[in-house]
Length: 121
Length: 121
DNA sequence: CCTCTGGATAGACGTTCGTCGATATGGTGA
DNA sequence: TCACCATATCGACGAACGTCTATCCAGAGG
Image 1 (tube, rainbow over the protein chains, first blue to last red):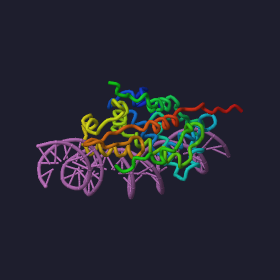
Image 2 (cartoon, rainbow over the protein chains, first blue to last red; image 1 turned 60 degrees about the vertical axis):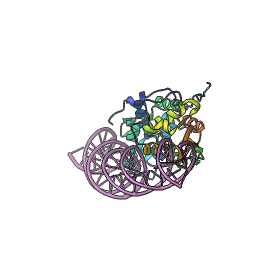
Image 3 (cartoon, chains in turn blue, red, yellow, brown; image 1 turned 90 degrees about the horizontal axis):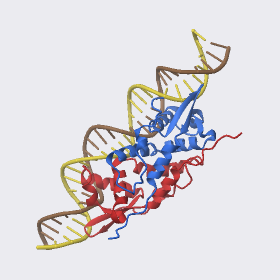
Image 4 (cartoon, rainbow over the protein chains, first blue to last red; image 1 turned 120 degrees about the horizontal axis):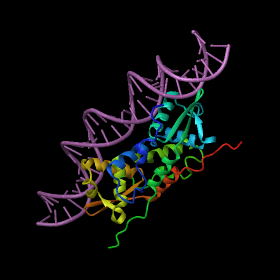
């Protein structure tokens, strides 16, 4: 289950894109998160997990939604896990995933367009 | 300058990821936008444009920020353009780019984590 | 112990992506 | 008209990605 701890990417933080130019490092960290979101299957997985009752879903629930092999789903879950967007926990035979809402809201905050700077002089 | 009109991807709309599972089509459209944001150079370009005075920047301003060839920058601007995130306008010798804030805020809204559904029964 | 089932890992394969140098295009000004 | 500058497009090449099949690992239950 490798890394479940939200990595440093999650620290790429807070100030909206439009406030000031991103540093190269901030951009690299943010890009990792957006890359994790850049696949339709992963977006649906995230959405399925987040909207599932109890805020969690087991892999068996997720696999049957798609026309894809179980290893492929497992691969996408790993990408989401390693980006810090979700965490997985084994309980008995099954593994349950849940979303890391702080990471989502941080991303959301980055995208909100601040006041567009206008030349007054 | 190909397509400047915000494409249908921009219509993949509105309801947060966590509210209900995305449809396959919504996921495909959203993924295109996140893919455009999934490169550090494009994130910095977007940020540079959005935070530049007047809310616009010409390519010449952008090229000199990076250690990359001019065609590479031009390529990234094209990706951002075709995803509907920015628009470009030629004025004299120079081409000026500006951000499409509605698309950004729509993405931001998708990411905001709604109330996590909890089993009460 | 063995077997079954849920899930992860490994390796292969075709496709897409980011970058480059070379070149085309479009506008400016002598 | 011609030379020059700012951008865009083209074609190539290696790296990264998404998918598959085959296989491995971990619990559960006989």
